[in-house]
Length: 612
Image (cartoon, rainbow, N blue to C red):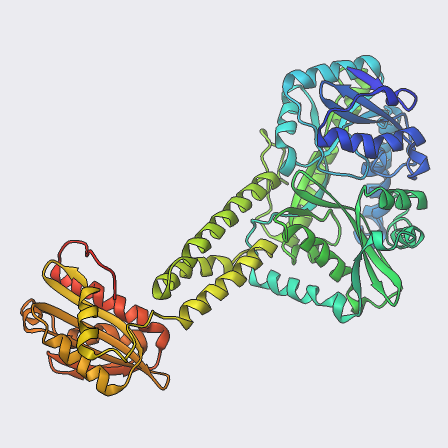
């Protein structure tokens, strides 16, 4: 196990893993330059090499002026004290609450609560939790305790939707847990209501309606100053404790492709943007900004958030939107998910251990229930994971993002295979195969490019099947007697009984009558169901020989099976019945229905031929 600093990190070797490559390309430049070259927070960055893992560390002494990203005191005392106002809680209650929180804050400062080694800390990135078994975690903890005997060992803001195994491993090695905050996630497999779909549809029209184009940030490489201005106006200027970034940070992450930037551009001006990073099948946006001076009616925020969600859902990934604007995000189908900070302090003094336990009781017993109550008002009683801490940890989203992405890919692969199988069928057989697929595809919970493409293919296959309900029989230039012999050869047979069921296309009435008469004169047990088209209408004729009527099947019964399929009717004698209908796309169904009817009445073996 080796600990690298800015002077020695160039000697580090790099395993061929995504985590190691990200540490080399993203974390090492930060470590070499120092955090304040890019960020407003002051922290010492180190890299730990253990086996094939490269784990970022952020080492703090007592930087109480940092953002909540690098200060537990600011997260749990500094910010909440500012939020307790007389307007919100009443004058007397606000004084008492602020007094109690400042007293606790004084004890936490005395116990050096911010003297921490943050483990697996990727700064603004999320969902990169290292995979550790108990043996590795024990080695890691022992190493850090030896190298930093006066520091608490902290794994910050772990998301149980992505990293329940890590949380359970930490619990097994005597780590404690403090409720950190909440985030919001939408899995691509989550069902969404009609109202959510309508909200998304409206949001999806906003940017275009306001005249904006969404462009790749690489098309505007000189936009870094504007990006910082937009970010500061929404974040650092509005919330003074929020992490701020230098202009160089935006230029570097844009130039090197650390994040994918998307810009809302109008008349050559960038009015909004977001950046994304993908890890563990989850899309996370570390940076977001827009021009607050523009009219709210433009819907710039709503349009950008919609596009951000589409980035993930269109490719079958989970989207994490973070906290804030909870009512808005809830109405777009996001689900609140808690984050937990794990800490190890058994090597510290008794007073410092007591301070950590006090912080745990205060946060888990007070802050967490308040967050639970707030989120229940927004999301209803179905929220998961915000009750008292229970072990083991499980994903509050039901599936992990990785499981959801894999399940989705398998479902879409199966749908694709089923569509290909249906494409090899014709007419009514194809339509029957497509029917359940149509229901599945048109009720798909989230927009997804592959699903949209499959819907389009499904529509084309349905249209082809309806345009060609069945193949026409021999041309009408063939003599009726010759055509009758051909139809009898192709007939479906059950022993000595034959059923001639065929579509003849456009044929003259005299030819059709002569053909029926020729078939009636054939020897043996014969049933006839013929369809033709004339002027957009369907013509039906059925017939039954004496031998077939002797088995309980006559022309009227055959007509009764066929006519409803083409939305028609007919009648006649038991020997011959004539009819018609208006739906040509039901012809294949009419032929199939009569075939099934005869088969059921004869109760014979499976037929050896197909429908003619």
